[in-house]
Image (tube, rainbow, N blue to C red; front, side, top):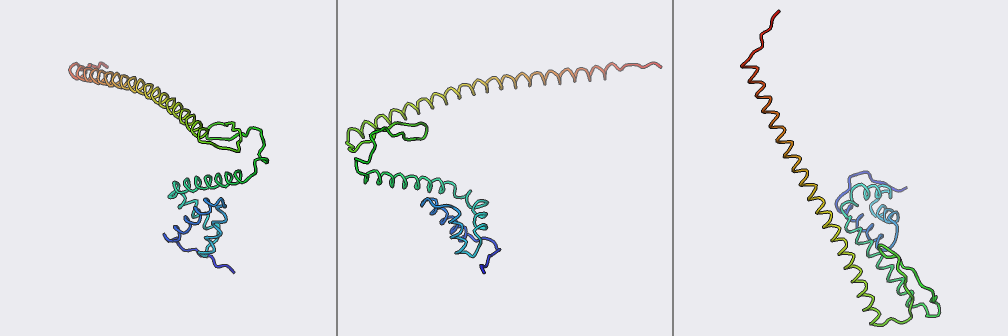
Length: 189
């Protein structure tokens, strides 16, 4: 029979849980298997470990999770690169290969040779594309900034107008109060 604990989690247990989960993410394993591993080490159920991770620990380690996912994708990219390098040239199809990048698909022609000028050309094109993208984003941000300035100016003018109207209303009310005090209305019955 497996003993399950129901006491509070210590900082060391939280740290162990985080380390194991992050390792499993880097190794392309599942979080469930990480919870099972930690559960065995701490005599807790995998469900308790999963609940603890999702309810408290994951929020503290968001940047570490993102880094682990990047490391996982770099590792898988290296492995696929090594696999393609070890693949004989005759096994590579002469057809173009579509590669999914962050924002769009690019067509790449597989090559058995890679030379320095190809790399330099690729990096130059890559840099110019990103500079153009950065310039476009900067232009969009400047446009948005100008629009917000115009909106702020309009709101400021509206606020000033409302303040003037409010002061005028208070002045009229004070005059009316003084007038009724100085000229009481006589009632006849």
